[in-house]
Image (cartoon, rainbow over all chains, first blue to last red; front, side):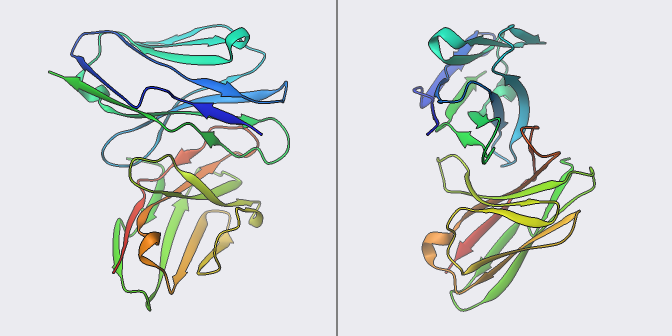
Length: 115
Length: 112
């Protein structure tokens, strides 16, 4: 069975601070995919990134960066110089390469960025 | 604007009513999904359609009935719902497999 843990329920920062959202996963598969989604107050989930289990390179996209470490089963997400518009709930998710291939979501981290 | 369109955005219905939620995508995606999301919880998968055929039903009560009339449309028919069914219902689509899912804005459903 697969599982995704986001231990941080809520984080509050002041604008321009850097913030890291943690994600730890469990799976028996050797091939799997990890995702991050953002859910602003309006409700829709916005896809941010997909990473497969064979690609451990870190990725940077503007102010966003992701650190994938198979050794610790973690896929952490860092926002640099946070902005008020970054306020949202962020979900980490996992899907296995075979079988159901359905997304297993973590419980989410609510990020509040104060002006 | 999202590329997955859901209607209506809000729905209030009584427990004896019959209503339908609609979802449409024009990205040529072959897989479509229904999720249910309660407040402060992650989305929970309900159904998956692949090539217009139901491939996953997460033991959802029969008062929820999905339908995929064609590759662009996905419906969720509702009948005799319970107050605990009040939630945000999200539709998503993807190319299938482990490709990213693209979500609609959701329908906020309230059962009186």
